[in-house]
Image (cartoon, rainbow, N blue to C red; front, side):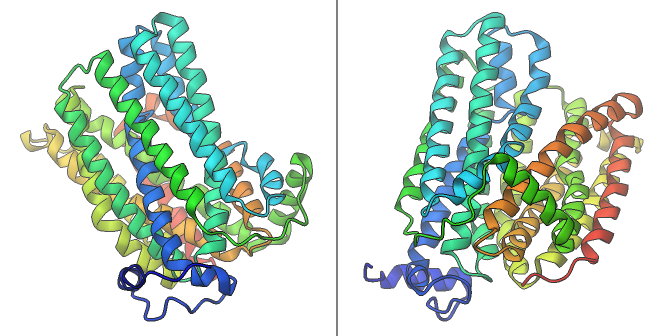
Length: 437
């Protein structure tokens, strides 16, 4: 074991408000000694991951890619479902595989490396792709990227639980969100700088930078000092499903958490529709979209450390408060759409509400991530994360389709009211959860 870096330890203790970095309750002493070093490796890994995510965004960058190469319009509608559900649905099937690995960081490294390869393939398609076949290859690369993202996601949380002690994980994720917010801010500035019609070369450069971001993520993950864990109890995919369903039935806290998490999807589902209302006022120019990305980055920089500190005190209350904030933001967005007056005919008021919802959404994410990691033990954490994410992935496909139909029927503003009511249900559900910390 290496000697601790004094300046690194002092910076770690300042960031976490921790007077003694060597005090740990639920991780081995050897892992506790490495905690300051691992804290910063997690932080820089998050920076690479978030920057890559923004520069390969299925909501922003990839639709431009399909448009530039002349792919059929219907393919654009497949981008977000593939990106989100593809990262969540397979996780239960790999939980048993990960459980067999004494060091789970190498699964994380593999997932990040595969995402880098997929981003590089997308960059090549920006230069050489054309028409329907090019669009098909883009979707295929996105499937690989999404599945690899799911692999990294479950391994990342498992490694986090093994290397960072309780009451510090929320703080780490909060600072990660802040650093990631800065990366988002840079990404938004880059997008605005490209103007209304980024060319093939500009998109290829963006996607190559995304590939570099995931390589940074893989490099940092590989350098994390992870104490080998137990490998007993590894299950195959079907055994994992049966065990997972049994856990959902027996562990009422876990079941109730997943109900609250499902209702909290309202924050994620509201964001694109709120952005759509803003775009209807400003047109579809890149400047308006870039403004939303910049606002999102600023909001994350401000909000995430605050939410992270609060999550270490009570992640349940963070989820409850974020649900309340979601309901308020959704109602404000609907009110803007219905309010007569010239000041609502601009993207700016929508950008303000959008930024508030981004702040709230970070609370949702930090609260439910911290709660899930804390209610699980080292032995079942990978399975809990995989089961919860798979359950959410199924719901995202089903609810996403329903929400899309409702938006077509009711309009974006009325849909926000529906999502506000869903958020109220999330608030009531989170309020009933027991404390995890």
